[in-house]
Image (cartoon, rainbow, N blue to C red; front, side):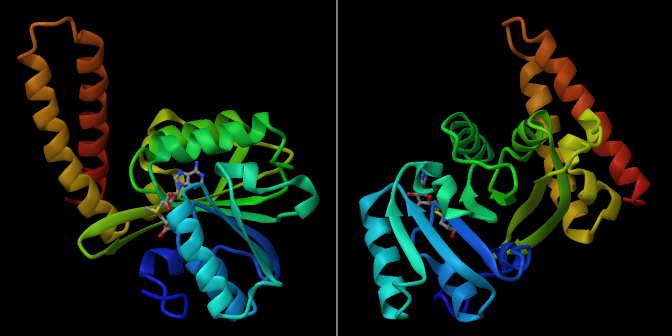
Length: 237
Ligand code: SAM
C-alpha cells in the first residue's frame, strides 16, 4: 500500500474527513492517510502523530517523499499530545488500534486539554467497538455515522462522532451493535454477527463449565446471545 493507493479500510475512514479539514491522524505509522488526503486537496493541514520512533521515521519519509513538509507536521508523541488547541484541528482520525486503546487516547486527550470538542472524530477500532461507543456517549458525543467493511477476510467498523448541544440517548443494545449499523443491517454486518454468535456460544459453554463464580458474566453473555439472535432473526438469517 502507498499513500496514493489506500487500503479500503483507510479509504472509508478518509471519506468521513470533511473537505478542507485540519486533520490530526494519531497512530500514523506511514502517514498514508494525511498524505493521501493532502494529495487529493481534501485537507488544508495535517498532523501525523506517532509514538514509536520507527513508524515516526517512516511517516516523516512519506511526507518528505511527497514534498508535503510545509503542509503536514509529523510529531513524535503519545496519543493526542501530538495536538495543541492552537493547531485548530477540525478532524481526528485514529485507525487500526483496539477500541480500548483509542478510548484511552481520547480520555487522556480530554484530561490534558487536547480536545476542543469541535473536532469530528473518525475512529476505526479493530476490536472493542462497544467500549469505545460507551466512552463517546458518556462524554456527550453523538454517533453521527458508522460503516462496516470487509477487507482481506477481516471485518472493520468505522465510527464517526461529534459533539452537539443535545446528545441522543442510546440503549445498551445500540452501543453493542452500533446504532447506525443496527439500522442498516448490511450483509457484512450480518456476516460479522453470525461469526460472533458461534464464538459467543462457545464462550458461554466454557463459562458454564467453570468452577469459579462467573454467574454475572454468564448473564452478560446470555444477554449478548439473545440480542445477536434477535438481530439475525430480524434480518431473516
Ligand atoms: N493508523 C494506521 C492504520 O490504520 O493503518 C496505522 C495502524 S498501526 C496498527 C497502529 C499505530 O499506532 C502504530 O504505528 C503504533 O505505533 C501507533 N500507536 C499506538 N499507540 C499510540 C499512541 N498512544 N500514540 C500514537 N501512536 C500510537
